Length: 487
Image 1 (cartoon, rainbow, N blue to C red):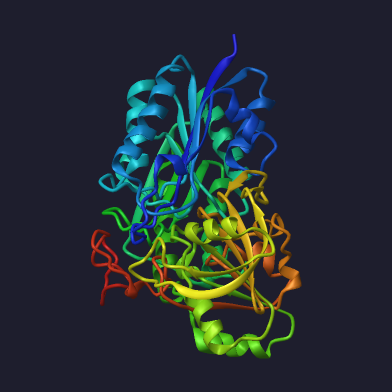
Image 2: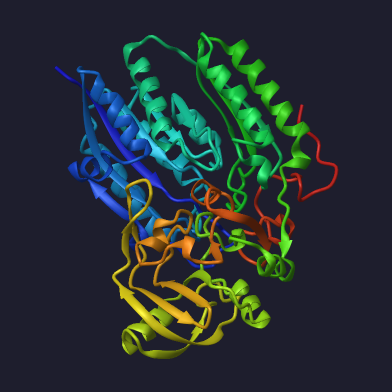
């Protein structure tokens, strides 16, 4: 008889400073066999896990429910309760299993619940009992006591920008099979670091953070290593557990786990001053873009839909309009009323519309533009990893030298396909605005002559002191002075 492996997913990265709530309807949900159909062949954790499980002829995958949403504001209480209940019910209906793999982001937050993933894992453990349970996490996870207690092994990404989703799923599945076979006994060491980090030194290919991850990989490759990661948290998920962590899991080797965790934590702490972002004022960035040869990319990390912002910032647009910037520019923005006006007018029509400030209206006020409607779309497309993007109705507008991709709903503006799907190739422009702090580099570094992280307002600003933190661990670097590493 085959050994049954239950699989479930719940993913969303929350920016609590974004006032636009995330709703149940914002989640893309697959149930039962749909999970397999949607994720097989993609570059995701689930696909990686499926492939490892499939290689073992003894095992059968039991898909339950997979729900994920574009990063956004806190999840409305009723909607979060519904999501968690539905996943728990789907697991209850398939509880006759031998092991479970749960795919999470880890930085989700509700209006009232600061630890949805910990709550989910705790409830699933209660439902499933004492069977092997492994969860995978984004390295921007907000790690909590409930998560660590409920799961046998937690496996986090090793790359930033994140290019190892598939490999992380494989690592999780291999650990799960080892637990199922009874060949490992996890011993866990965790060091909590009161620090929030941003900036280019987090780029694992070139930055100091990559050295810390290298130490984690050495642990995993060692005789007793099972999983090792530096979990830096999402700086914009302002909940009581928000800080950085080093988490090491070994096979019945507590001493090695503790020693490695302390070594890596010390490295991170000693380099904390480097893990801060360097930002360029907007006027200076525009001046540099005027003089540059080739494609310039503006990173609007403050309004990064990839980090949970609302996506309706028009700060850069206003700056370019005030400057009368002459070069061909591509800008994305989330604005449902503007899309409605474009659809009412029709293709080739000229429209006078207000853009921006429809979601995060405490930070942004609309700007009036006259534009021609170039094209209209249903907003569905494929991301680079093979999953489906759903921007709602989408309009491409042209206003002078500026081309605007306007969506009803937030989408990840990280790779190039979000533009290419609507007939816009970033390589055809002199300036492109992305809504991502660093993830975009995977697709833009090879074609950009200049990349600028622009200092503008937003709910996910890398200027952390500009944000109204209330709940995270305190004191914490860099928000407070003279922060000490706990003994």
